[in-house]
Length: 315
Ligand code: SF4
Ligand code: MG
Image 1 (tube, rainbow, N blue to C red):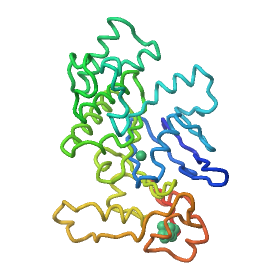
Image 2: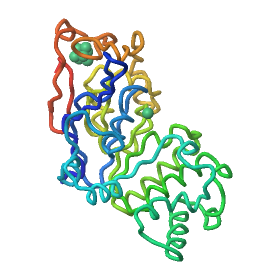
Image 3: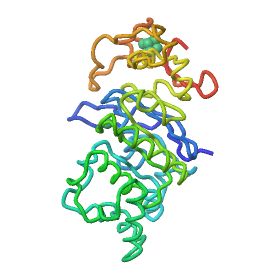
């Protein structure tokens, strides 16, 4: 039933001779077919690194990534190539991820060419089909990326990802660089495409408001760890982890009946340096609820109710 299973995955980077940054530090979760899992956390929390590790742009330091039940590190060359077709990525900055010297049609066809899927007339027709699918026009194929707005460039990035018929997409902050007025359009496009093509999404964002509507479930990351994971509804209505409480309190309340029920929780200080993380719970230096045990022991990642995972000594 799971398309993707992430088991105790770590991605550590060596910094000089003696320091290690534990960007992703023992993360476990799974995503069902057709589901959207939202992933939120501050910049530097490791969410992009996790996304890149899942699609194979980075090798894991330890742990396993299973795709359709198969361990992705045990695949042969041909299977690896097929896997990299199935898993595509959409990036935050559409400008940086599109080659400025390539025509849009060729950018979209990059994957088609790399996997030798189509040639000639069929390739051309497929590019047009993709342009139209993402709300652009056939004659846009001949133009260059700089001739488009930010929102249109993100549509080009989406068309490029779709070109090879993937089943799983990691969208790494796909709307963060766009005007607020355009964000909803891109979200709607991603949702329509998901229904049409039975896509599964890992949708990364830095704040909860951005993932609320598109996500079936939401995971919250802090300093390389998942601290909470549950359904979108439960996360907003019955959050458990103190960090999730703080993130939620930062979202302006729009429903009138809820106004005044939520107090803004201001976190003290900045996140600690990833080169020098605190002992015990990584959140303890900013946690308003910390107890003595928090400085001594790392809280375990556990499912405390059905579909509700949390890592905190209070539960
Ligand atoms: Fe706060 Fe302790 Fe829970 Fe960490 S384990 S979030 S420091 S209460
Ligand atoms: Mg990032």
